Image 1: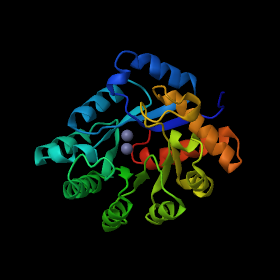
Image 2 (image 1 turned 90 degrees about the vertical axis):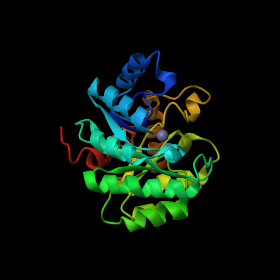
Image 3 (image 1 turned 90 degrees about the horizontal axis):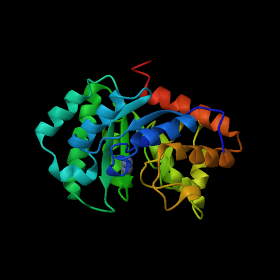
Image 4 (image 1 turned 45 degrees about the horizontal axis):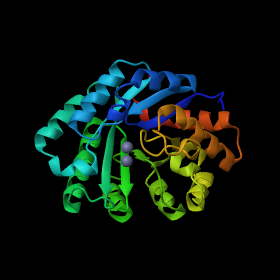
Length: 262
Ligand SMILES: [Zn+2]
Ligand SMILES: [Zn+2]
């Protein structure tokens, strides 16, 4: 399968140990698949440093700066200072991933909430969009985001909710990003969301190395596979895959590259 459009994988963990031995091959295959841009995601100080380094060495790869809710318990104000400093790097285009995860609960929930707020304050201060991770924490997540309404912009990454949840994020002017989960069978609610999200609010991602799309299920996921997400979005919205590529590329450019045009 090929796409004539150019693709933007807005969420890739390129510094994951599973890419350690063949990252350049992985990036090469992404280019061949038409993936022109990707964001390497930070999840703590160490992975953010890795993401910034990877972005610095590759055209079209950007980095996000953040502390994942799984790592919230390790947060200190020194982290906040270091993460804020890294935002001045030219390749840093977002704060993320940040948010709440009540499914795995790897950090106490009240700590997750306070760190999420602290990260949103940093996003407001440095004026970068946010990449929000929400798992089984929709009400608390939206309540916190509402406190920042009009002061931050961002995306609900790896969206997995229903139409009502999507509407609540859209009401906050958030973008909705679909991963390989939208290609899985028996995900009719998610398919419905992918059909109705407005043209100017939809993004795509892999969240690799996790969540390989159905066509590659069981394998390590990689940015090249974002084409399967684009293909599924195109089928659901009854448009060409090149159109799906174009609208998601344009939206990602507006959200993430608007301030740093290049
Ligand atoms: Zn996530
Ligand atoms: Zn992620």
